[in-house]
Length: 441
Image (tube, rainbow, N blue to C red):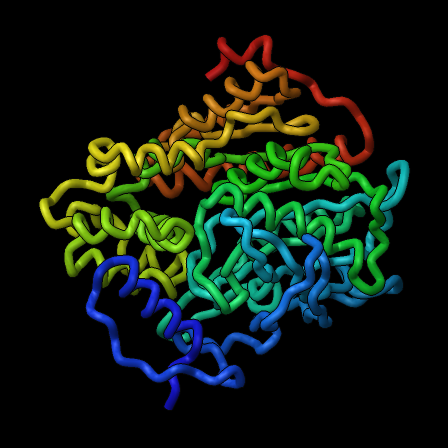
């Protein structure tokens, strides 16, 4: 029986990138379903052979049933959802299909102007197609003994919809769309996917947002980095997107520091997602991977390529990357000793460009998973560029678990973050805290 195309692509990519022995496989036919850890991915997520030329063009759409929905006199609560696929451009300038979901809210918009739009950039979901945030709206909790996925972004999406703003959520490059691997924390891929989601939302049947609608960006963790990168690239890549404000929570702005932070924690698996994505985006890094990764490292990367965040926690929590290398060095030590890797990660650094519109950077002062210091430095760097920055340090008790130290501020600050972004969508000015930022922690 032919192997699913997605798993075949993962096997081939892993073998090519990491020097593993090629696995014998039979090429799959276009009609074959894609199955990831026992989950059949709907055919909708298989991109067509040819994509439109213009970024943000809607490729296809269909109704999306929301698992959490209630009837009301004015329609289903929180709104009518549409699954969508749209065209974007990756970091190498190549066309790519990106999937996601648009939700037209039942709640009325009471602010001035046309109904605004919020693009939700999801936090870490994993690298398997079954982990996509759009699928999480339909299946908030999925467990089949081989994978566990949780649509935890549903909470922020529903809170934003209650304000009367429309919401579009992106699945990012290769998460959901089955033709490539998800390029985890690649700033350009993520930024383009976020901005083109805003463009695609205008073309959804029944959507009330227009080209004149104010747009807000909302993201935490991986999503915070994606929203931050999108705010920086909007002036050059998507000047037609009327960006009113950006919330970037716990952004991984400096991946060198983040690599050190997550190694040996509950989220060690994210190192594998990063490596898989970077090797796909920049094949010139393959010889470095070949030289440093042992058989256990290659096997871990292949395994993680189809995992969701829950799977990675169950299988790779508290492991150290020293197990994956030929000489027992950590990935952080290898990066520090390899100028080529340092140069590549420098291209992923967020904070070198002035973001468009006001931005709100929030980070837990005890976050040691996505380290607080590098997130705070992003706010400082943006202030130095003359950006309109609101910096919010979230002070919670320092707990034993790095994962809780990271996700606690997500819940503690989310209400304020939604309120701040809603104010920007209503046209109210932000409070710039750059003058007091050096004294804040």
